[in-house]
Image (cartoon, rainbow, N blue to C red):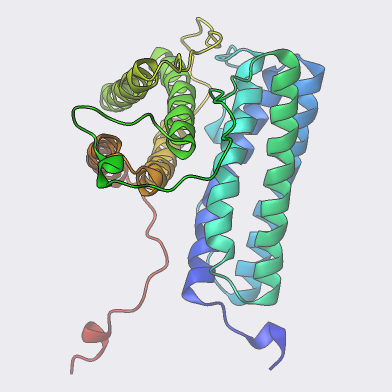
Length: 332
């Protein structure tokens, strides 16, 4: 069978649909950061990231058009006010590229392994490669500028050891020290929440809609609780914790983004957050850590439901592609 006559599977349609909205949103955000950024090294990475996201939007548009699938309603220049004063300083633009591509590497891997049609698979494989490249460049530049906080160091193991007691998973009373995988998840969950808090701080200054303002405020409080919980664990383990290195929010009170773009961004970040905490849960063998992750997954799911309701009430939530209602079709 010729490649062009092979229909897209449900996983391929869903993956392309989701990524279209994410990359379309990224174009708006990167355009904003690039417009205000004055650091030539950071501008170079922002420009590269913008061109890649624009290319992704174009490629998905072509695939959907060729297949006769409606292209989702995206964002445009109307959703970004470039004349508004800068809301974030230069380094936050670099942090944005680092954070978004770190998360995208993980997200794109999930989507890629669910594709089979040659052109779609090639597209997502190239996305994984491009996001990996941008992540590498952003991390390297953050190291050069001294704003990358490395995870805690531990001594190298000097021998192979086996778990000899079920107490290894004990999270109450006398607990074993956290292992390397658990340290990693604690650290990067803290880092991700620091990024979110700075985003919330900036948006709380500029969003005028009371309901959306309260929604962002609650998101900030959830991130603050996670940081305190996970930092306290690292501190008790004498691993010092993770400290935010700088304040990257200006004193602007003029919003550079539409309310629809802001809430859609939070909706996307909530989905990623559940994925990342679920991953941390799967790697944590101490029961107290697992309990914390389960608690925060539930809290974020409840928070996400509020965001979903807000988007539906405002007419902003697009219905994803779905299966037909066979029972309805079969009625006589």
